[in-house]
Image (cartoon, rainbow, N blue to C red):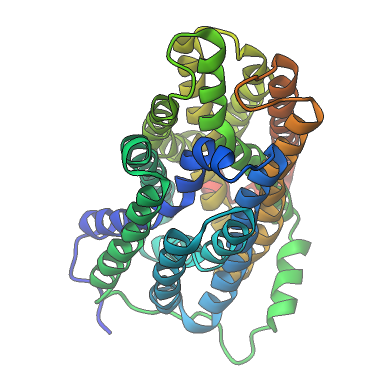
Length: 421
């Protein structure tokens, strides 16, 4: 197969559009959560467990995608796993109708959705040189944030009028569009398989990655980052709806407004991924991670305690919070490719996925459990409950900062950003 006839910019733009379309399914549940939590009679723990089931399935999917990419190539993996993403999203939209069915079907959707993530990052690392790679990966992760925002915007308009199932159907249609775009943009892209007959077995590849001290540190930092970010995304719309019921600035139960604000935060955080990746190309990977990880940890530790604050203040802080929390995501992904040999990139992403999304999968459940234990009830939010719940995210943010600092101090981190670290 010959090299793609598309320019780098056009190739990246179309691949990003594909990723954006696949990402609609990622946040659709958090957008309809204020509605289905009441309709299905769920506790906060049950509501968080459904989101955790998605993340658990997603981490298995990412692990499989990374390992399959090493054997079959990133392009092959991206396209073949996309069919499962389309089918599982449709099943969730059509059949979910309660706690148990949603738990199973949303988990299945997560299990089939990793093909557009790690293989996409590998495709970008194959095409772009290191001095442009951070920015390119920033755009790719920004495309996902745009998809998250679009899903919440659609939900804010569709769910209050046509119902939550119509919002699920709209997000499921996005996966079909993602498959169509992906197949077209990758039609001339080579499918590169870097492993050879004498390459170590997959278990040995994972062990080699873990023995790589700087790679291990960046994976641990990313894992705590994932805990903070995925918990924020799962519960922000519900928090905003609860906050509006407290301060009286809008009618209680106005789900559309709360979800719309959360969607706005996601939309503005698109700039965070590109900005963070671009800054890391210029000033170093760990320097940028330390800046934004510290900012997001601070936001996590204070945000829940502000639930009785005016809505304009909650919105402003949420925007900064989302920008900081997402800005270092692309930097973690870029840095990992610079710390392990190319033949181990798939294994490195797989290991990162298992640890990172394994921890991230627990985050929404722990958040909801904290709300229940602290006595929060729908329509009667308590400052203590939300303050403690968001603090569980803040502790993870501080841990991400700590492991990043250790990485920066390690002499083995010299390859990062061409020596900038």
